[in-house]
Amino acid sequence: MKPDNKTCPRVGLTTQIVTLASLSVLFGVVLMIAAALLFLDPPDEQESPAYGVARVAEAVHFVRAANDAGAVDSSLSSLRNSGIQVELVPLTSLTLLARPMRNVPWTSQLARRQLSVLRDITLLHGVSYGAARAISDNGRMIARAA
Image (tube, rainbow, N blue to C red):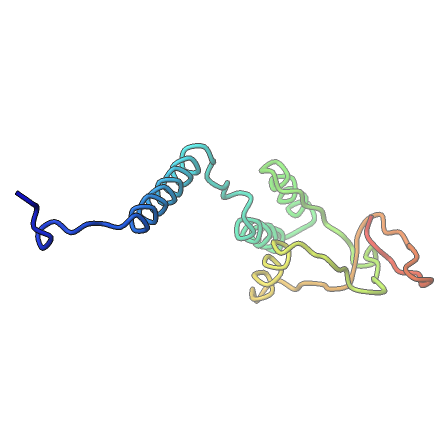
């Protein structure tokens, strides 16, 4: 007795090959996702720009809440002990850059945008602090932070 073609359709060779290829790609994707979930560590929240922005805002609030120079020093000391690298810098110590810095990391750009929306924090653009050195760029002297 012959099988009835209506109840048992024949699958062509092309359909079988496409099905096997699709299943193997799907299996590979599932394996890659499983490996990523098992072997990759979740990102550390302390490395995110939002965490850095919150810490900067916290430092500004602590220093502004201080009543005298001793309280400012105490606030800065406690911030340093908590892991924030903070320093009180007089405006006269800042160097004006001849040209804005290029190739700023996107995380720094994101942090600057987030800080710029805070009402009680003023960002200074085009300035450098620390060991600034003048270097030549196409015959012109420009200042860059070291």
